[in-house]
Image 1 (tube, rainbow, N blue to C red):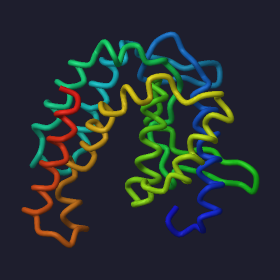
Image 2: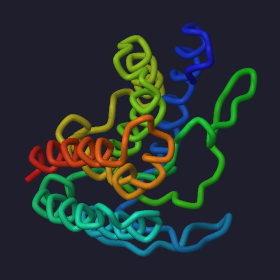
Image 3: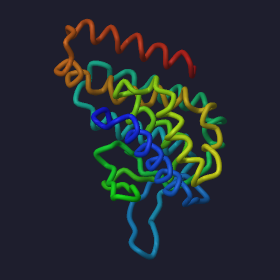
Length: 215
């Protein structure tokens, strides 16, 4: 994303917003893990959104490369459960689960997604929040309001509005999302110019701020 011109970034982000809204337009009665299926339909393991989200956090824990901050998984789960009433109001739609640029496929006129292995029936607000983080904030582009607006405008163009509850649940998803940093402490240190102690201090401060916002 950072390598594109500003004009091209805006166009691509608008296309991503449209594509996300198109995926999220597939509505379901319950939140679920997708455990199988074919062209005739999906096989779903259903539950409340809080339950599904907690189980997906446990999946994140299993994939983590470092146990330095393993305790944060339990603390985030506690915060998620404390917000069950808010979370379980979320709509249930198809979500890709990892709408990052490497998983985006662009033609001359449109954009779609590949690598659907962690797709599930979840909260479209989390999907859009994650996309904004992966595409902009993690690339130091998050303070460019034109790019955020382009992503949101694309979503609105297809869906008519942003996902219901996006602002209300964003702080919860901030905490969940940062586990992807804390759980890979060793990788963050490897690619950082700072010492392991400095990286650890930063992670602790960031996670404390996120946990405070939801507990």
